[in-house]
Amino acid sequence: MAPTQKELAKLAGVSAGTVSNVVNGVPGVSEAARQKVLAAIRQLNYRPNLIARSLRTNRTQTLGIVVPDITIPFFPKIIRGAEQAAREAGYFLMVLDSENDHTRETAMLELLRSQRSEGTLLVAAGGHGWSKEAAASVTAQSPLVCLDRLPEGLAVDSVCVDDARAAAMAVSHLVERGHREIAVVTGPLTLRNEQARLRGYRTAMQHHGLQVRERLVWQGGFLPAEIDRVCQEGMLGARERPTAIFATNGVTGLSTLKSLAALGLETPRDVAFVCFDELNAEELFRPGITTVVQPAFEIGSRAVQVLLRRVRAGVENTGPLETVRLPATLVVRESSSAQIGSGGGGAAGKRKR
Image (cartoon, rainbow, N blue to C red; front, side, top):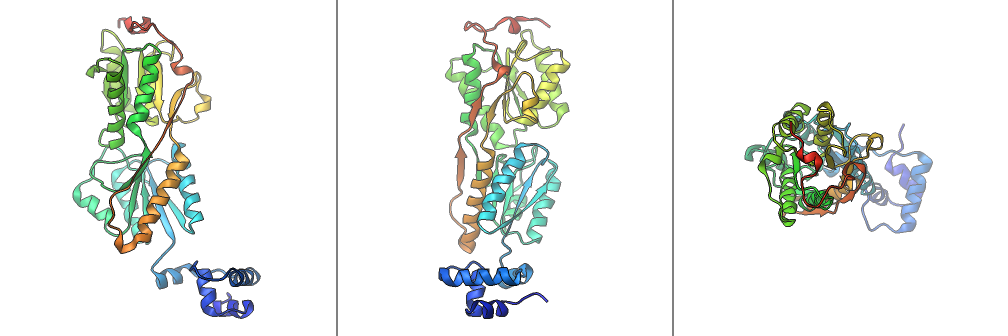
């Protein structure tokens, strides 16, 4: 039979109330008494009944995170940061995969709510905005924090990098290498971070006195077929193709590289390339890909901190939205190494179809 808290109290020589306070993490217990209780817990191999405790305290000590594709290396790094921060705060983290499907995403959020998760982190599926009704439903009972991807229509706390500034840094790098005809391939523009990265592209071009050519703004998504289509049209449908391409996320970037290879083009020989986000198995790419690297672990960790502030506020959870924006870094590799003349164009840009 499992030991009880009364047995713990008798062995430790303290009151049952002191044992309860130690087990439940209530402050105010002296260090000497706490050590006696912990020693008794170890000696009797005591395991608290979490279900009973959650019913008694109305707290489950659990958080949830929903990601769009757990096979993309960026997301496990976020999860690791979130899990460590949750564990250090005495919480468990449940991980669910929406498979980048909005319907499944809402079902996963509902599942976490039914399991009495005290708060949820969400990396949104792409391609869908949120209606007022859907947004009100998912935020009604427990706090929600978005990280990395920020969908339209969902006004919640958020943690991500400064997307516009990071994108501008990547595009400026290409301009400084002599490129003037720079294409941008985006993910779904229903995500506010994708909008910000496109805005950063435009800002950098204008900052360097370059015209933003709309024919070089290729609006894509997360599906390989979408990216292949816009790349085929962009590379084959213009008299002068771009000398450089900036992809606004890793999924889009990988599909862009595949599309370029299908066209018989190599980077950086035919077109320079920079990607926002690290790609799958980055170390296997030859040439190496110049990348905007996000602090994924820190994003997950900071998101848990923001979420727990909301959880602990309880019914007083009415403060202004918190927006945490972290700096990204540019890791320069071979894909953007070919420098062309400062006069613009370059041999690659002048080739006809």
